Image 1 (cartoon, helix red, strand yellow):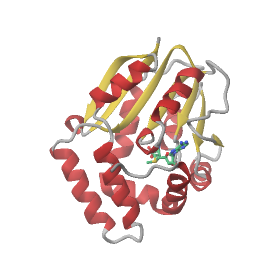
Image 2: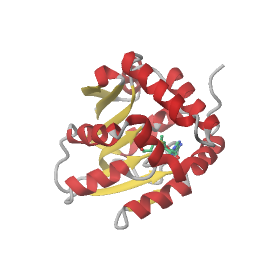
Image 3: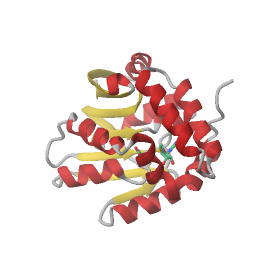
Image 4: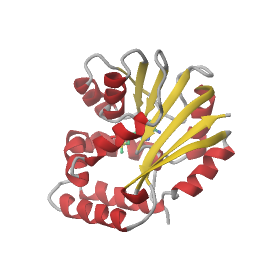
Length: 222
Ligand SMILES: C[S@@+](CC[C@H](N)C(=O)[O-])C[C@H]1O[C@@H](n2cnc3c(N)ncnc32)[C@H](O)[C@@H]1O
């Protein structure tokens, strides 16, 4: 049976783990998550004065990187967890963040040139609705960067082991069990790309990190 991804449950989980979220990410990935986020965003080749939406922004890492390296663009971070948004605002005092749900975006059609989503889609119960919404608010020819765990390989097993070891010492063991389970159930990149294509995207670039254990797909709205 698949993990329960009831949105209320997922929201409470992220609210609860928010105080330790960044620390745990740093420990589990030995800091590499930030470098990977940076490298993936560079691959988008963002044009100046673009409108960018960072979905499932969490504590705002993507938003921060975009603001720093593309200061002439406008970026909005969106997440449904108020606690994650609070932290994002502390880390990015001048950033724009809103609380919202990816399956019902509070924006009009074709408002954004780029949409980013890191480690988010895996947690969404209704992926199809989220992808439809991303397609709706993205401009024609606009790009959607999706980054998450990719292929099951030796690096992905090492990551699982690190997660297990690090979380033995935390109070949020259940939540990290969820992380491992959701990772196992999430489609590998080839399958995911087919889902994106069904919603009207075409794949323009795939970037693999740790031999694909983490993978980014850049999709264009056609
Ligand atoms: C694993 S975190 C990723 C955060 C950040 N993008 C990063 O890479 O560090 C997933 C985030 O997705 C958010 N999220 C999950 N489902 C969502 C939904 N339906 N709408 C908006 N945010 C959602 C959670 O609140 C959480 O902050």
